[in-house]
Length: 476
Ligand SMILES: [Zn+2]
Image (cartoon, rainbow, N blue to C red; front, top):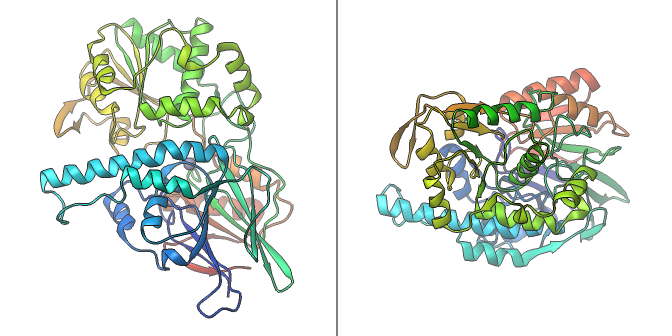
């Protein structure tokens, strides 16, 4: 029996890993592959799963097919290799370039975490070890094999795949998997993370292709459900953004923007530049304070083939953000700390996006107590994170073990999301040539998966299941 097994992103939005076992009559099952190999993030209960071995030996997996460069999809690859995986990792060229930034950084953070626990003696493991090191992450990159969008690749004698656009972030792909069996074939479609539909007004600054590939045909669909219970606002956020910035500057404050280093920061910089050029906001000094985001700017500018027309126009009008007047890119920790001396209004865009680590922490510690300042959220804040606490108007937060009072203004703008919301998902599903025999929902909190399931059943009357952790299901 050929089957799929959900090894992550089931009941949660992280740790994406879907195992396909294609029985070819061999005892113990046939060739196996993994679609995505992501890190569990967030609460401890999930993170501990990063330390559990897979239910199948890593060396028995023939290949990994990777949808995109977010850590919850790619961040466990170095660990898989440590556990004995010896095959290739297929990804689009731009995903590989982004992985070359995010994976070593992830290894570096793992090492820092382990060192911190050893210093504080706060781990049950003596000594605490990193899941993998920065060097191991760099070595993992040698396994990556570039595959262009639309190109068919044979992975095993009975299994081939093609990447098509997912419109989520640079390089993001859906995987169309074909399994040849008993003289016929079966199509499986994995969405990875699904981007927004075409509109540019209420999802401004979208860097990559608009809209996921339409007209799909699959016998089995595995789809994300992050925003399965949400509606993105359908208004242009730029006037609201300009207003918030102007009010803050007027009272002599600075704007602190926690932003994901990959895609969100680049997109936001272009929006800021445009607002300045159109004289909607003053030409404030902007500090982009994330080495990863600065590297990612370079990767973005190397992959113009994925830009939409709006971004092409912006780049041809304004050139590289790295050359813009008044935009400062802080590479070293010294440059980062120096921002604290800035007493006049400025804009600080820093990571990480959920305020759980990185340089954003010292900016928040410094600026949260001042009511003139504004903390502006432009991304998803997972439950339990410091970002979620701030967004929920906590009166104080703990940073570096110190209590910091929150007196600054806190605002969130939701339109910058790179995930389709429910109406957008439904309109995309309507473009399918036929109903899949089964649609499996993954990558969503239980509530959003349940609501999305109900919406699809009501609208399309499809057979929809919500994947459970380690659940196995036969392939159609
Ligand atoms: Zn993603």
